[in-house]
Length: 346
Ligand SMILES: [Zn+2]
Ligand SMILES: [Zn+2]
Image (cartoon, rainbow, N blue to C red; front, side, top):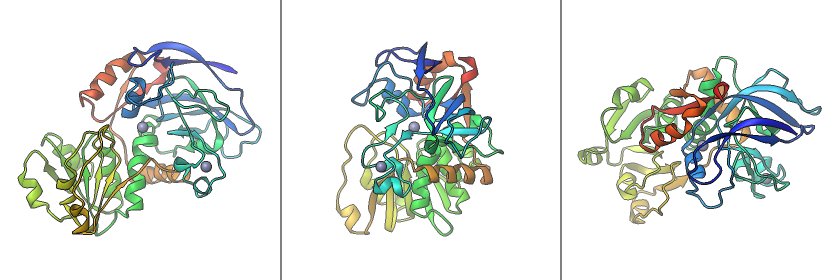
C-alpha cells in the first residue's frame, strides 16, 4: 500500500478537503502514476453532489488524469518509468466478454470499474484523479503524445473521447454537414474534431457571444438557437447533430433539422426523460442515438489524432483550493471551457 494526498468530499455536497488515501500495492500488470493534472468534468459534480444514486463517500472524483509513470509492475510491457500517460473514465473491465474483446470496454457486459465512485472487482471503492498518485492496470492507461501538453491532454480523456467516438462512428467527414449543439466543455472540442475530420461544421448555441470563438475552433457557421427563424432556415439540413447539452431540449424541433437518414446523437444527459413524436423519425427515416465515451484503443487513437491536428481543449488551470469555487462556476456555465486542477498545488 502507498499513501497519497487527495482532495475528497466526505458526503454529498460537502466541501473538498485535503485527506490521505491508500493506493493498492503494485500488481504485476499495474502502473503507478504521479498525477500532474486532473480535469473537472460535469459528471464529477453530479457524483460529488449525490445527484446520481449510489454515491460512495468519501469520494475522490476525477477521470481526466494526466501524469508521469512513477513505477511499473514486472509484467508491464507498454509503459516505462518517466512515460507521459493518461487515465480516463474506466480502470478495469472483465477483458473476456464480446465487448471487451473488441475493445469496447465501456460496454463490458460484466460491468466495468469506473475510475471513481465505483467498486473494483475485489469490492474496494475506487478513488479518482484529484490526488497525487493513482495505480491503474496497464490496459487502462494511454500514452500522451510527445507534442501534447499534459494539462491540455487531461480533458481529452473524457470530453475528448466522448465527442470523438460518435463523430467517427457516424462518419463525420468530407461532404457531411454536422451540427454541434451546445458549446461548453464537450462542444468546443467536438467542433475541433468534426472540423479536422473534414465535415462542414455548424454550431447551434444560445447567445451570439461565443460565435468568434466557435469560428476560431474551426466551425464554418454559427447559429443562435434563441432566434426561432434559425429553425425554419435550417430545416432538413444536417446529416448529424451531436447534442452536448445536458439540459432538456425540444427533440422534435432538433430532429426537424436533420436530412433523410440523419441522426441526433446524445452525449449530454438531462436528468429528465425526453419526449418526441415518432413521426419526426418515420417521415425522414431519422434516428436518435446515444454514445458513451470510447474504448481504450479508440482513446489512444483520439489522442494521436488530436496531436496530429493540433486539437486543444481551452482550459483554465486552477489550484487545489479552488475546486469548490470551480464547481460553482461550472454550474453557472462560467467556464471557457474546462477547468484543470494543477495537482502540484495540492
Ligand atoms: Zn467525464
Ligand atoms: Zn467485459
